[in-house]
Length: 448
Image 1 (cartoon, rainbow, N blue to C red):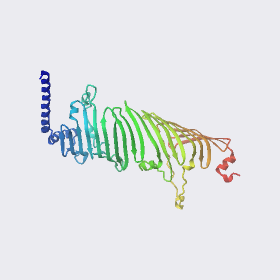
Image 2: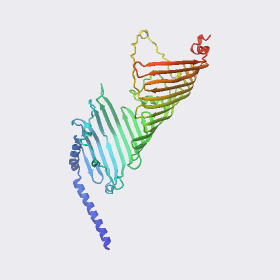
Image 3: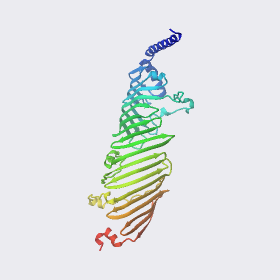
Image 4: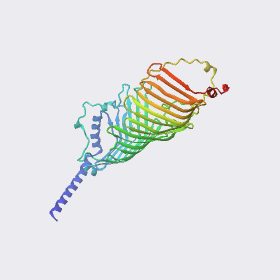
């Protein structure tokens, strides 16, 4: 046997001895009780909270499993964070080669309770307080020669999670939001490439969900989101603090929208019977939003619109819109009130409404509406054009015109929204309107 082979065999023998020694030491030192005696005091000292752990299974080769983990509230009464089971399994050999490969991260029945107190503080405020600012030396990120350690996680799963949020700072009854039945699965999780993710939960009784792909390196997503019966495709990324995103709402019926929107947020449309659908594509580029392909179909009416918004995060927000329709019958939208009014209702004197305003609207708006043929209260209006603007709380009807009764109707107006009670001014112009045709439209019984 050559000297070189003897050296190689000697090194391999030494490695084998060290490996066996490591196994023996690990079995002696990494025991459930030693983990409990080491981890629990460290966690309690770091959090300033009582920490409870049930059964512990630990292995230097495969990882750790915790049963019945709980972090109590600061008062020691009640649970802040808990989980029936926490599992972390990793590859030791990959770790020795400066790669982090996690086989499994599992949370079973995690519970988080967040409470906002009457003074505006939270039940976790003490955990975010710090006595000194973070310095460069406090950075604990792990780097290698090429800049960072690649992290690969084979599977992440959260099952039957619960997030409870209670806001005691609001007037009256505290607000309560509950995200229950939270389930999440993600596979092949990596910091360097995209990976699939699937999420589902119930928010205050409403079904929410998300499935698609996430890219941590690009801070990007390409997913389909769900809220009750509403579905929307979302894709985008965040770079240098700037958001670029696309949202696509496929053609969705008003019936599905009505049953999907929580009643506390839905408009009161009592007595109205809207049938139809809506679809839209929205593009966001930092502080600019554009909505194109907006099509609204309502009671056999088709309306197309384009919307542009600039300076989203500043004031004033600038809004430009354009609405078009070939034909629009207003009477198909307005439902006649068929209620029978009793004598007591008819004789009731309603209190005088209080004056509204003033309003301060940080909005700069310009809009245009064009309708080929419109019908209102049975009166046909052709080539309807409306141009409006809003600036410094002054709403202006720059031009409202339509062909009617053989002539032309024009109107301009101005409303000052910045004063109490508001102030109005208007101008109306009629050109070539035929009186007999107008009477025929408004009072056909008097046409002769």
